[in-house]
Length: 117
Length: 113
Image 1 (cartoon, chains in turn red, blue):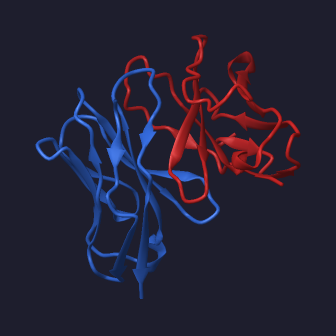
Image 2 (cartoon, each protein chain N blue to C red):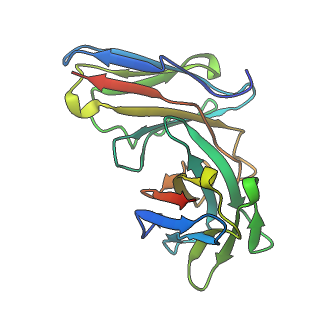
Image 3 (cartoon, rainbow over the protein chains, first blue to last red):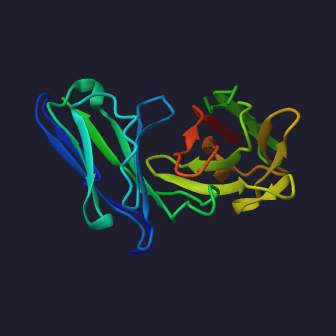
């Protein structure tokens, strides 16, 4: 597709339920990122996939959060046993391979708005 | 640790006046600096970036930013603000390959007609 695609765009879930958020990066982009944006806050890095390398999971806030990337393309962010503080916009982004340049632009999707009630 | 600071939560400017949104970064190696804009209920849109070369970088929608190594700053500027520029602006830094962008907390720009 032309841009980074995320689904669902909006999700309301009950506390304690599991949720899955999907990201389809720009075709040909090997780097994929997940960020979280809470109300009134900046962007919090969650996890980063780069090609076949082990993902950088250093930003995941707890073991309830996990992500996978199948076939080097689509990624799924899973939040288990959701809590109210998980309510936020989850933004996915992608970029070209960064081996030669750390200046490659990162392109963002529109985000998945998660509300835990 | 790499970080950026956006010292102003809110910037108000009259339409037609020049605008500046401030950003400073932590000193560590050679930074790659970015500006993004977020309109209400939307994702982030790339505006411009500094990688190397000229310190003055021009980007989308008439915006520009100047990399100032001595002041460790990368302020976003526009000569004449438009009401449609009202949005949330994020500065971000990256220091090396295979690292994610680190974002500032954002600055809300309001351009008043």
